[in-house]
Amino acid sequence: MEKAIITTNRGTMEVEFFNDDAPKAVANFIKLSKEGFYNGLTWHRVIPDFMIQGGCPQGTGAGGPGYTIDCELDGDNQYHDRGVLSMAHAGRNTGGSQFFVCHSRNNTSHLDRNHTVFGKVVKGVDIVDDIRQGDAIESIEIVEG
Image (tube, rainbow, N blue to C red; front, side, top):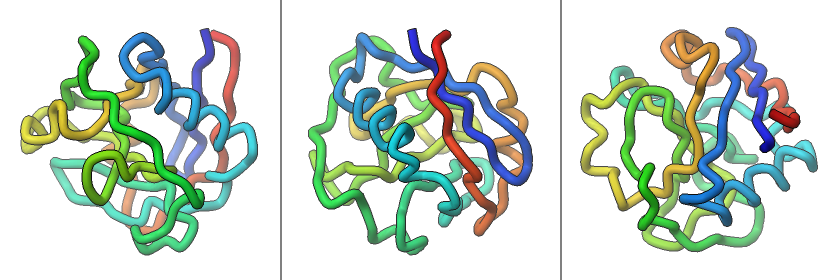
């Protein structure tokens, strides 16, 4: 099973994917990561005690990869807990490259089954708390787990 190593200017996070719950979102994230899409982008939106968001090539929250993917909301792991990776979107079935990582379960229950959860930080979750708006996603590497 593949994992992601997200390297930021604040440290490194290791992510395990929820392949069974969100196969399209996982495949999309892996594809974009292997293409180097995320390398050098910023965490363009950071809301304390909520989440950090990245994956916009414009750095504004308005950009994407040039296509959209459907939401996957029926899996067992569709709960927004600390360290969870989830797809950002501008309405159902409009996700593309933007994703967010939750700080905690506080203030996130309204996202359950509305945004596709596709993985979770399993090492380095404290880095999520250190990220500030404008910090860099230096690289995302996909490795065999």
